[in-house]
Length: 187
Image (cartoon, rainbow, N blue to C red):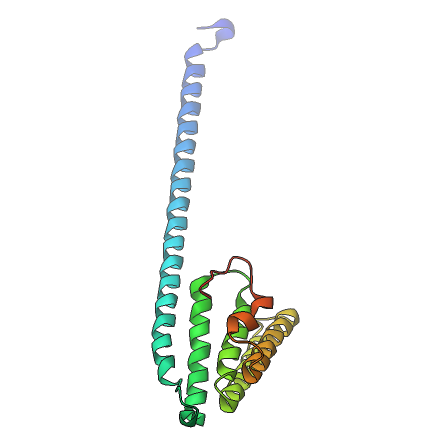
């Protein structure tokens, strides 16, 4: 027995239990950190796979867009213009997903509208109709606020005007003012 009738071995047991608890807590924290890192790696891998799929889809759409882009003006039927415009929008959507750059939405809006409007009057009409319908749908579903709506419509209008009038030689030139930093040069 120790001083005052206390058993000194109880203090050692208490210290041992405390060390065991600390070791268990440390092991649990390390396991949680490892699980969190594994989850993050899994999410990054899924995001990379999604970007790769989007890039592959954009490449496939490019092949189909060529079908609806006749080189001879006489072959530009209203149907080929409208179908081609739809493919322009689909390709630019998949390009935007593949690029995965924050703030690129307006740039790809502008690019899709430029390409569709440059197909002719019916392509421009399809671009205007699709763009307005999409913006109204997004606003109705609460997916965009007034600022986003206004900036997207301004980018759409820039694409329509540039594509329909031929003010610019390419969508890259026409949409340069709304191009975000960090967007790869291939877009």
